[in-house]
Image 1 (tube, rainbow, N blue to C red):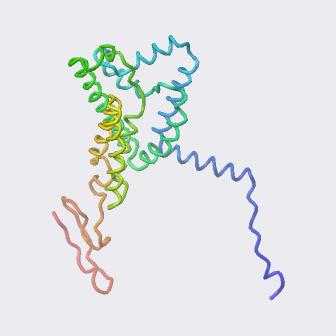
Image 2: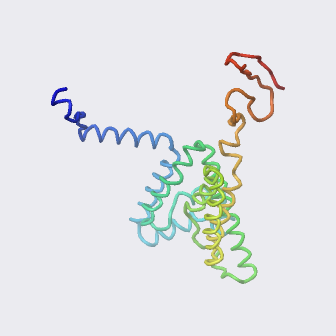
Length: 259
């Protein structure tokens, strides 16, 4: 054994250019697997930039014009239900929402697929908006809220975010799933009890709608479940299928069909 055998082997030195190339490739793959999240985030960046540079009068007009308040829902329901999710009231909140998008929306989109993720967001956003604004309407009708609430600003992405938090419960394995459900339900439920605003009600409603979207998860899709014993048994679910039964020696024993 030579002296050189005791010396640690020196690996190839990674250059800063290679580190940057790896980082760019990883970021590209992340964005490529969650395109809807990042297109939405780009739209929010544009609208937040607009809000930040226009005059207070124009800002006030844009927020009210794109709001899902009672007046706009009565006159332009489809338009405001869509565009209200492309604005946030305070541009300073964009960075915080950017973090939430990367931590919540992007993983959810990768797990569900873009269209199922987008469907979950739409159900939560539209459903929570309609429920919360119905509460505003009843509050005005029974004189518990001022009539000016019919013109209130109601925009943002938080209802869709709360809905995705709800559906992500099905990613958490049992028995930890129930702890997750209790935790997020308690958080949003306490906001309703403590805050008592229509947005608190909207967030809680969106969370419940996210829980109700189990049918959109991969576990609920036909043909996705595998038998606990691997390939040696029949897949779960109905329909006609064929599988191979394995003999004691590892060879094929019989091929059976189930209809």
